[in-house]
Image (tube, rainbow, N blue to C red):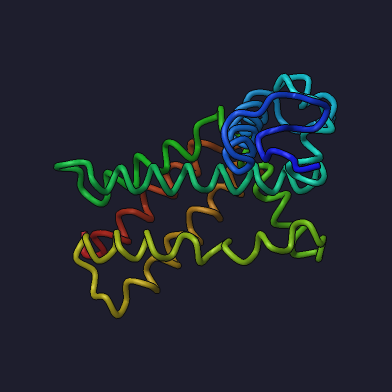
Length: 203
């Protein structure tokens, strides 16, 4: 018998297409992880929090590990969207845009998401099959918007990609520093020094 793509397992009603529903569940899972972390996280517990069965989560994501990868991907997309919005903000200098993005990334409410990011990176580097695909966009997904931001800020197009890579590596390194040390003041001071050297090396 033919099935409707909007019909979910166990007779649970659908909302939009399969892709739409998967995206909705991913976004809801991102919010849950941000608020509650991933310690002792199970599909049953997450499903209950999201108002769906754990079998529905398996249907859409395959496994808990694959769902966690999607959570990180969604978090990264949110950050790139924020960068795009900041670039369009009238009168906002590149330094101020970078500072605002940094403030967002280091918001204590996002700490659980940042921890998950590094956890998934570690799993991917160890060759966990469900995490390995995450490496494909780990750097490349960021390079295009960062290179565009560099060129808009007046950087030589020939060096914009190198500068974008340097900026991305610095931000991620300082995020790891913050998670490892908890030294928010020290990390913020280091970022301010980086921004000074990066955007105004002669000051």
